[in-house]
Length: 322
Image 1 (cartoon, one colour):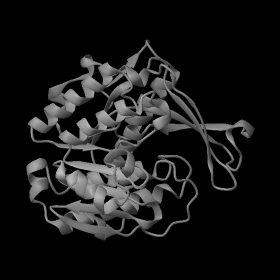
Image 2 (cartoon, one colour):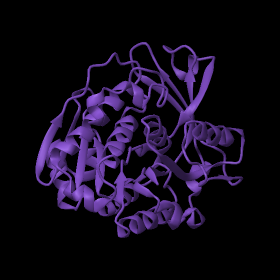
Image 3 (spheres, one colour):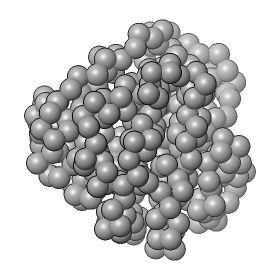
Image 4 (cartoon, helix red, strand yellow):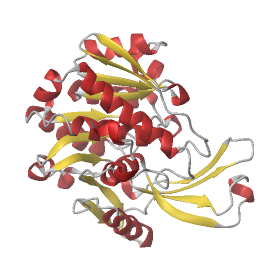
């Protein structure tokens, strides 16, 4: 049984061998795992959990690099399909001396957008306690339909459905389509994670407390708003709690939200096997899961890239697994 199964993209992130310059001025690159759902699977696995990724990559060298590296990290990639109908997406990411990030994406008509009914395997997905969805690979109607069918079936089985939209508005021609997709995913979700910068687009609210109430009113059992160095705010059964983040020497914030999601979802998985158990979980237990999320997300910022600084279970303070 998987603790967390993610549906969505895997990308190749190229990071500078020496940070401090923009993408255009960087000469030497290091190839790394990337893509928010893939990052979450790696985070869960490194923490001692079991994870799987359902998605599509190219039948090319970069695609096989991703499946090989994910498998090496302990992620089940039996349902990561390779296709010749699109190339594996690439992202060049650099952190400049002033701390600003510089990006260059190569994802036009990428393989990640090819999620299709053939990728739906209910028997496989049913093996997961939590089924987690991103949105960035769901640009086509077929991909959205497939993802929503998987989410609806998971909810019907009583699984914990999770989503982190991880907004990338520049890739959507019509933001209304993205908003509708997120609303549909929220309708199936037992837990939703948003960053503070995303709450107005998703909920129409500007304050985390109001956004959390909005999510609760739509049936979300445990909702989270992350606030960077200020930690996170969670809401469960009408109760709101502020979670502090550990102090960190921040090098790169890429993937910090994915790190939080990995810690949060594994923290839930350690305490409940399905949505019904989540609905009955004590608030203090959910606070512990949120603390684990904050710790993992913070650790991510202390290294370059989305996965390089993801911690191992042996590196966690023992109280986080109490």
